[in-house]
Amino acid sequence: MLIPGLCSAAGDVDAANEHTRQFVRQTMKEQRIPGLQIAIVKDAQIVLSESYGLANVEDRIATSKTTLFPINSATKSFAGVALMQLAEAGLVDLDAPVSRYLDDLPEAWRAVRVRQLLAHTSGLPDIVGAQGLIGGGGEAEAWKAVKALPMDAPIGERFAYNQTNYALLGQIIARQSKMPHERFFAERQFAPAGMHTATFGDGYDLVANAASVYIYSRSRPLAAGDGDRLVHWFDDLPGGLRAGSAMKTTADEIAHWLVALDQGRLISTDNVQRMWTSEKLNSGEDAGWAAGWPVLDTTPGKRQVAGIGGGRSAFVVFPDDGLAVVVLTNLVGSNPQRFIPSIAAFYRTAQKIPAP
Image (cartoon, rainbow, N blue to C red):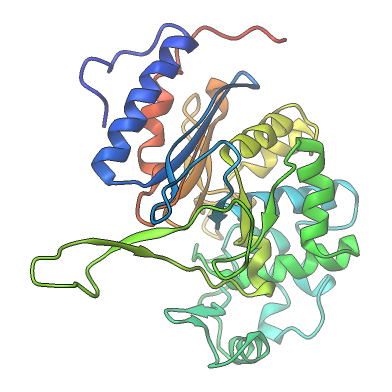
């Protein structure tokens, strides 16, 4: 979706920014998105960081640059960086079986490699079902239930997204770093990237300056013809799953994190490229996921890797264009990964920004 008259690529960053502002306003109107943050990284510089709309609709609280948005499963990209950091430190071998780092695993799970957890090619059953944690109780019951299930597929045979993978990775991070994953993320990623307000939590935690999350629902119409109504959405994210699902941050902070990645301040630049390389299935085909990152396009010159979460938050990196676009919203179903490529098109041919 492009605004009529703005289909040609912008000639410079200022023009691209103005095109983006118009596009964002139009998209928010069309999708009825209450609040949104956007940040653009071009040539390792943040060239746009803005906020729009309402963080809280009922109290008319405006979205600001510092409003915290839940990024849900986009947290998995940060987990990918964490595992690469542990690998660089010699504390984790991504090709090692998970049984090297974790005890009390079912026999069928023991040969799964760490990198297969990262890429969702493990074949493990999912600890989360349609109604949340399986097992009918808390986390302990869910772990007991999932460990009693058969494998969903042979190890490495196919891609199948599930939360068991990142729950186990959270345990590996904690065990090998000797600290909770929240602290490891804060010390090794948030602090060096300048992410001073990033934190963890779900819809039931009291987090200051956090956006409320909404969804348009027809489930309980007030009257005939009431149509879609905006209602609250609450994420319930148990502690054991939070390493891959529960970050709250801002688009501006994610942009600073992406710059830190680009500059090799979190992991080496060579390992950034390895982290973004799609895992192979047993057949030799690409799995479509790398180490914590969905791989959207592998075409040389057009590569795209992403962090996507909650049907409302996404960042997409275009490595061959020196470009990244971050869009966070508070509307479930807005799926910004679908319209981010239209925003990216404004910047692809913008003049290269000289280093500061």
